[in-house]
Length: 65
Image (cartoon, rainbow, N blue to C red):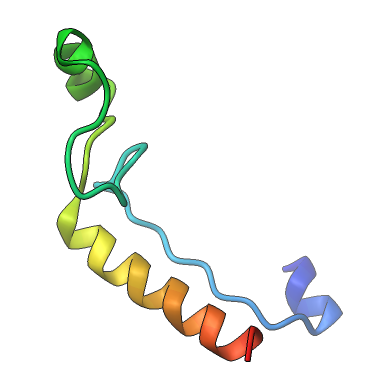
């Protein structure tokens, strides 16, 4: 709401299925900790990542010409 009031161009996307590290291509971290990382939802999410990377690229193209 504040960004709207200030007239600042913005876009917010939520990825409810995505956890931390969802932009990674592969599971990161030590193999020993991966079961804990899965429970903590620290994992790639290819479906969300495709849309997020597209949005990131569009933002950079728009503002960093």
